[in-house]
Length: 189
Image 1: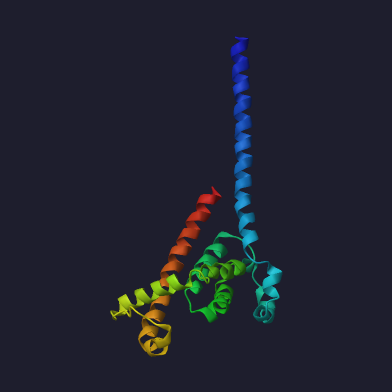
Image 2 (image 1 turned 90 degrees about the vertical axis):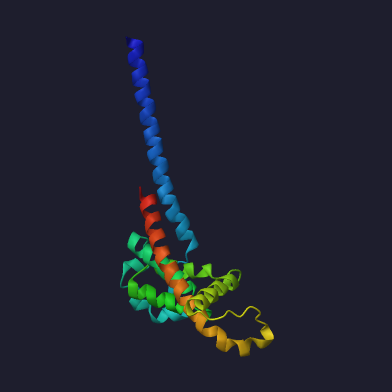
């Protein structure tokens, strides 16, 4: 009888040990993904010292959502960053900053996600945008674009291209928001 009691007592100790160990590892895993995300996004000082953001410094201190990682601000930041990633190059960062301020989303994350569209991915992304725009407008696609004739082909390219960037940005925005929301729910558990 005493042997059976010891086995039950030992199994309860082992169970408690594994439950506590599992709880600690889950807690470490939860805090770990936030730390990894914080390392990827620029710091508050770096953004506030940017030439454009210096003028907006009083405005940036009004809402804690600009700097904190909570569900609402992160999901909105992902949506804004993905939408702005499809905008034509010179206006991406400025548009992301303005939209992040208007929608009170995480500012560093909004600006960081824009870099999905980078020198390596710009050609396939913008070609996809052109294809989407040309398909929606039912315009014949220009197959051979030469750099020498780009000025003459520009009049046929700009409408499908701009429509495609807007539509692809809108789709990426909605899907990014939903995926960020789903990931937040899954990692929160």
